[in-house]
Picture 1: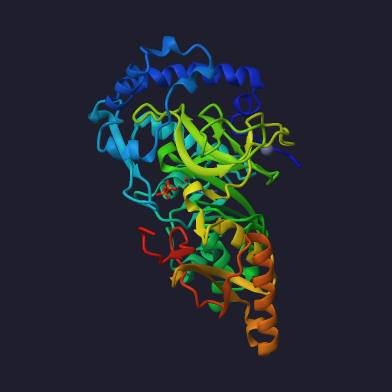
Picture 2 (picture 1 turned 135 degrees about the vertical axis):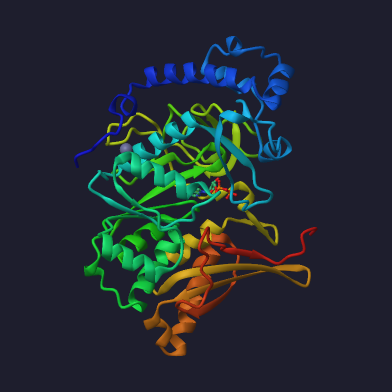
Amino acid sequence: MKFQYWNPQIEKMPRADLELLQLQKLKAEIDIAFRTPFYKERLTKIGIKSSDDIKTLDDLKKIPFTTKDDLRDGFPYGFLAIPKEDVIRLHSSSGTTGIPTVIYFSKDDIKRWADFMARCIYSTGCTKNDVFQNMITYGLFTGGLGFHQGGEEVGMLVIPAGAGNTARQFKMMQDYGTTVLHATPSFLLHLETKMKEAGVERDSLVIKKAFGGAEPYSEDTRKRIEALLKVDVYNSYGLSEMNGPGVAFECQCKDGLHIWEDGYIAEIVNPDTLQPVKEGETGELVLTILCREATPILRYRTRDLTSFYTEPCACGRTHRKLRRITGRSDDMLIINGVNVFPSQIEEVIMSMKEVGNNYLIIVEKDGALDKLTVKTEVNAETFMDDSRHLNALKEKIKETLQTSISISPKVELQESGSLPISEGKAVRVIDNRPKDV
Ligand code: ADP
Ligand code: ZN
């Protein structure tokens, strides 16, 4: 495989140099943080007076974690480090888990973000010859403009298609010769069915690659999208608190996401003890941004669960790789005392070929007990089968889930296309239990 690098000097920088660079940037970021009301108070309280008190990367650990609640408490300007007249844009999170948080950008912040995004896109093998259809929500959500700027920086022809309206999306792919797509994995999963419905032949399209991010998805889901659409799928990770997309991205090896360590300091901690996990163990990702002057955020608890690869990547990049994010620590469902992550259910469902491309997890009360129902679409062929086959499939899903999550759910099979599809992040779990229980 021939690898290409947007910024070879940085991407392949020896680790010792990279860590020195991180320390330099961390010190600068600490000075920036002192200009915000929030960190001025917090850092002073723990005896840090300036960046001179940060002598090694390890000194970062003296600083307490920043949480989403801190960001909400600091709303609207508690985390702003530059004069308001120097702010040129704001973005906010999609508010999946409550009130959204706001992030401000200076002109240079936007340039730096675009450069990180260009690095990501280029590392998958894209060039200025590509036509990039950005099929994701624009607006306050960072996925739209983040990818848009990165694509332009690479020099690709960027189509700001936005989410939804699949018929129009196919028309654009045909008209402009789209080679690269960006959408949520759940939307990508559903494109092939829509293609068939619209009578569009795959041969009439020249798509080669797709970027999928903004929500967790399993390796089986990736393989499924790749087989359905006949494209290479690359995982994209980011969050609005850390600019948005561009934090970590898969290279051409498609095996783990390089986290750009000249832009972010990544730690992985045990979400209960908040102590660092052992090398290679799974825990919660904690991020410190090193590339933003308008809104510094130190040691942010992302709630996202992942682990570091311990081996270097074949592409030659020295920036460490993260494993696929399996979900958020606050995604965990407790069902009759058993801990279940929605990603465990997805893994089982997507590994079965009879099963379709959409599913829904419902939790409700049944008397004193919790009841788990998994509704899953089955492909058209299977759905037409006689009821004995369908019942056998239901049993197979039930048993496999029982082995994986130690709970035997109720399984309902549905016709392909019958479950709701969201244009933004997919809603996979409906928890109807009363909140105070
Ligand atoms: P919100 O926190 O309101 O959803 P964001 O739009 O900033 O707002 O979403 C960021 C979150 O989306 C991440 O913290 C993570 O939970 C999820 N996410 C983003 N990219 C991925 C990915 N590639 N894999 C798994 N989860 C992802
Ligand atoms: Zn790599």
